Image 1 (spheres, helix red, strand yellow):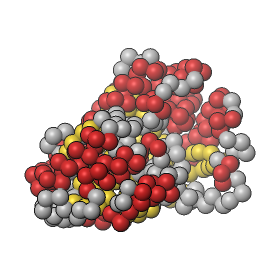
Image 2 (cartoon, helix red, strand yellow):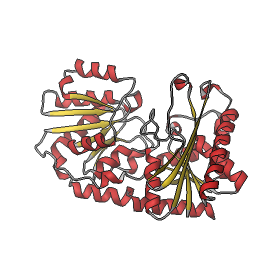
Image 3 (cartoon, helix red, strand yellow):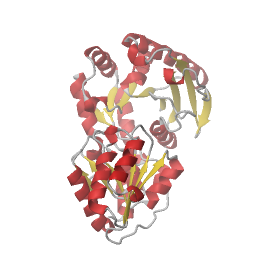
Image 4 (cartoon, helix red, strand yellow):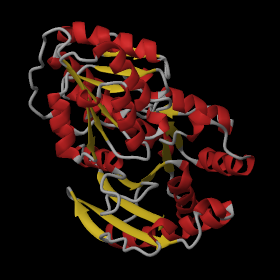
Length: 386
């Protein structure tokens, strides 16, 4: 089967070095699973880069399959423009790349678009003009935090109904999409875990009680709620042989540093900044537990990466983590509940030795490994072809 993948964001560019990495992991899995795979990545360069270079390769061969990119500049923020103007621009960009792709590699059997906006709009145009069925996988957290404007919701619902299969990366997100767009059914197609994490050496943890290193990775913004994490840590681990390491960048970096200093745990909290894939792997192997204290998450990729590295997790019941975390691999608490988060961290510091790394990895592979992803994706593709 020939699958053409379309991401909705810039794909692995110099300015956005990990954007679209999850779609690349899926493309890699499909390629290794015997599918013919291609990727087209049309998009718009925002006004943020209007006076700066935005270098990217227009063509490259990634792990044996072709990737074609083309990004046009927008002289106004997309949110200022009329919806149909934005949709038309993406559809035209996608059509141009699609024709170039087909001329070189042949017509795909199915298009797999990631997010309705804007890859889904491109896939819909390809379907209307070339009769290629399409599958959409939704990743966007907008459905978990509130309804889109009526005009936008209607346009997105039209695109979703025309798809051969509509999926989302977690049950909570699938239900939210179905509710807001009035769809009969949205299936679940989880992300696939990075195979390099699955193949990495399992490093032994420190099992002495209360000697623990927590790792949290994510943008330093209000949704990720690192403030609750630092508050919970200070309440239970101040002055003890425990540490938090926080990976990521964002607007709250300075505020979080001030919070740690005010609570007297600045020497126990380290901000790591941006982590590339190798640095992330090292941090996962060095940690005893990964904590994701978010207010909203559509999935929770860092959680499955932690499990692949044999590390237990703590997460909030904020959407996606409920599909990943259970009593066999970690602990779940309510979002924004600092007391419950601290209690879970305290419990993990005492019981972390009960989680066997080999079992955590095996369970992760069974649910989020390449074989599981290919099985679920194949089902969606066959539904679209029918």
